[in-house]
Image 1 (cartoon, one colour):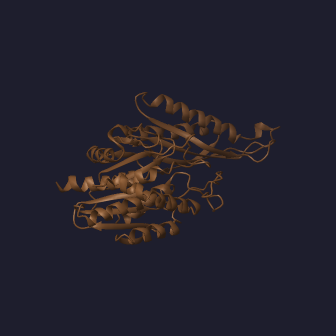
Image 2 (cartoon, one colour; image 1 turned 135 degrees about the vertical axis):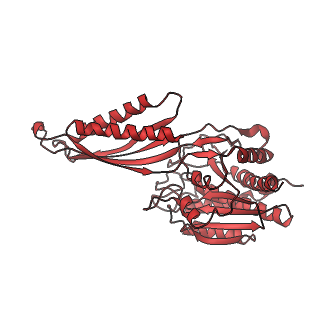
Length: 393
């Protein structure tokens, strides 16, 4: 009997062609109309029951009948980055590129759909598989909702018994699958703060309150509070990524705008970081200024269900070999798969696809080893087949 990976490798070039087509035509969050249409047509032609415009620009597709229902998810959106690559499949859209591999995710899920269609014809699906082509993982809309939340509101997770997600790793060793139970990616909050001082000429500093100096003290206070209030055994970080203020070298700044993020795994650590942020910003008032602070709730931590992760590890081992299923070293990056995994037990894992030299995600030169595409397709299909078999049993 031909294995999943052998069958996927047989149509590797088609996966490469699909991924490159999507790479040439990247679309930002909640603008993925073309990408969604390509995915919908591809799986509909394989016999999947397709539903369009789920969560604004998302697509769901089902195959099989009855329960259990297993979901496989791929995100579709690109990033507002100008690609620096010179490959012939580089982005054709100025200032937009697939710098995180979501083009590969869509191609791999289409490949998995093809393998699962074959399995269904052979009577090997003991239940239903639902594909989730999800918009907007990289950003939230004006109401603070990412693509996962929008799709959930449109019923994409109704009746789901478990959900699997796969992320390509341009920095991870090719061919290895990185799978671990428990928390693997951080929760995130975003914040904006404005420090208000009083402008004056630098030659008369006594007449003003320098917002840049106030902001500097606030930044240091936030960092000190973080370093001294979190146990060395816990993990969490507070970072300020942008600072903008002032308009002339000889004028004290009237105001300074700060933007940053909080990352955490546990809710108690999150509250400590939020409190450290508020206390740190309060230094501004002590020094004669004032501040505005808005904290926006982001994605929760990705926490892999132990039982579903075991299913994934066993399934993927049948594709890459047991020796190439290795633990994933958890990271402070955030992922809205976490929101799906709150609706049903889930497992999110990474697949190594590093070129030489390896590329960084969210970087203008991002790219992957495309030999990973059939591996990812087979891994996702294997997860669905094994989960259906285990749940039915």
